[in-house]
Image (cartoon, rainbow, N blue to C red; front, top):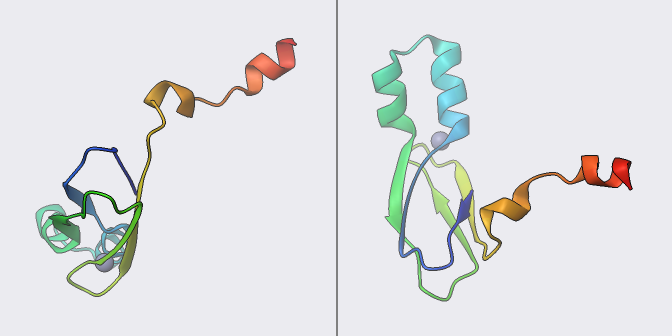
Length: 80
Ligand SMILES: [Zn+2]
C-alpha cells in the first residue's frame, strides 16, 4: 500500500482477508467489514507495518512520487 507524503491516517482493505472471504462465499458487506483496516501513521515514518483484525501484515510505504510518474513508459522507449 502507498500513502501520500502528508498523510497522517490511512484506510485500506486487507487483500488476504478479501481473498479468503471470497473463497468462503461470505457476503460482500461482511467481507469489506472484515478486511477494513484503519489507523494513523507517524508523520516522518517512511514505512509502517500494520495488521488487520485477522492478523495479516500490511506494509504501508510513503511516497512523494507524483501519480503521473507511475505510468509505465514502455511505449516511449519503443518509439525512441
Ligand atoms: Zn487480513
